[in-house]
Image (cartoon, rainbow, N blue to C red):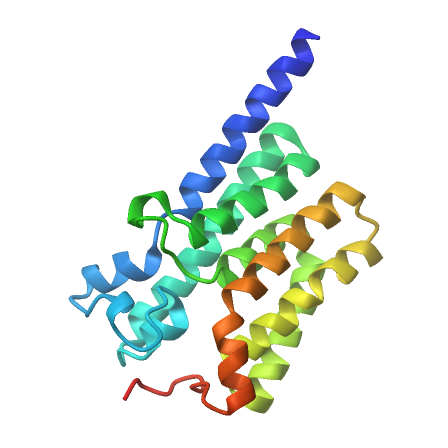
Length: 204
């Protein structure tokens, strides 16, 4: 009984840590570091690598992309080393939730793609490679980051299922995919209307 209580207390601490890691906005921090405008005030207003790229500074976009992905990697690796696979999958969800609703920035964050893919890379590299290949293919063909992201995340759960992961893991990454898709609802509307900006296109 005491062991169960200790485990769930540790799991709660791990998930809180994952959420706090996810709450760090690499877009805002990189733009401040390089003296660029706040990404929340340009383009789509989303604090993510694609919107940071619209400032014209590729360095900031790369820092943002790597930092956001690194948050997912760190959250999953720490949780897995401490408490195992199931908590690691839940930590992936907590990190993405932190990115979407960051406690440090008024609970107004980004869309979670890089953090989700980083978490997937740390959790199951084979699934990440397949999802990443799908992202690159869609991005290369149509140059829409939103469409590429939705396609990659949509394939995550089937990939994990095919690799033999259990129901809690599948449920956690399904929730990640749903959360990311929900954050892209405006992008989907713009894609339908033909108004979505392409990768590398600067804000008007």
